Length: 153
Image 1 (tube, rainbow, N blue to C red):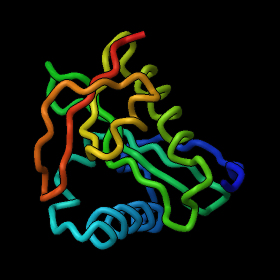
Image 2 (image 1 turned 180 degrees about the vertical axis):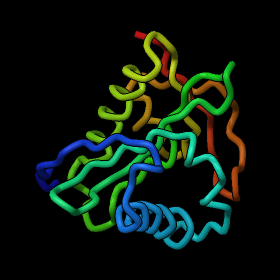
Image 3 (image 1 turned 60 degrees about the vertical axis):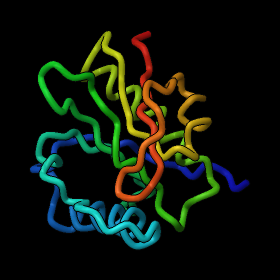
């Protein structure tokens, strides 16, 4: 296992990104979710303008990203589009990203449980952060998923 690289945390709304920053983030998501996972689905789903976007950066280099949002006024906040750059896997960045995402969700949505839709094979990973399954396994865009919830702390 490689050492966790130094990183800074950047959290902002979509309209605060430069064109290059936005391109880099969306390209990483498409490269991972659409190309690598061979899953043709609408990655640009219309929700990004409503989200907080969290990025782990090493200088100008994007290491990992996720989005945080509340899909509806009466819904729990969610963490989604969790991805680590393929060039930086195996360095525990996924763990760092989730710790930072939970922290930012707790700041933005204090005392509220947090939900996510996990690829089924990642249940143990998300479980290590206090998430527990709240649904049966289902297919989303051809990939097995399960909804998970982390109770307020």
